[in-house]
Length: 312
Image (cartoon, rainbow, N blue to C red; front, side):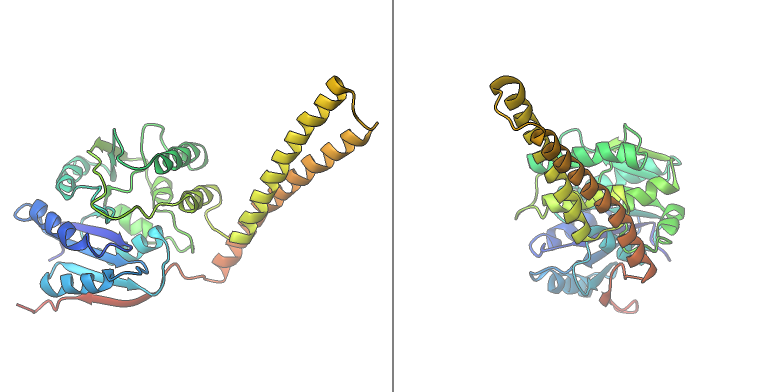
């Protein structure tokens, strides 16, 4: 019998969180709904995989998936989604900032006829850097992937089975789950949920991760050298603007200038920067298309562990 709810959790360096997290899930859902947990180890450098294997030995409804290398959160999620069997699938982080007790709240809301229900956090207990990156990407998502203004693309959400089936069809090497969802359905809602402090350890969030999300919004794929070209163009343009201000100041205020030289230098710097930006953007699209055509894998699974269905 298939579970009603599948819970997919990407795991990265969370050896000290996994046992209390799965215990909390069990406490929240037992006697309420039939469920399964899929823990996807995304190249953790600690003992997370050993902890996952221990959990699968003691719980029939926990499946462990080990990726051969760190493939990124969305790729790890896609690996888990393809193994999920539930009528509804919950996606949540491994850091305990998403409370298992709220799973039923999301489930009840989604049961009202929605395809997806996001958790909305009125107050986010995370760093200013992470809040800033999240806000910027949220605003960009409104423009680039037509995200509804009122919806917060939370990593804590529940999705029904028909939508999951459509998500699993995505074959590109750089998936972005929320972007795929928005391209599939507009039947989306959200519900207020309390955001908790991280259980222990430090966040795995970095500015490069935020930038990666931004580029997925922008092109849907990724190549680092071409991103560097884009950044170089931005820097060159910024320097050009600064020099433009300086040279205009020299021209009109100090009267210290060489006839004709200022205009030529400023134009060269400005347009060189703009050309590099354009080449970088075009290169992003071409590079990502190249990787897709050459079937770059989304992830590689080295091992799947699950207790024998006939085990007692």
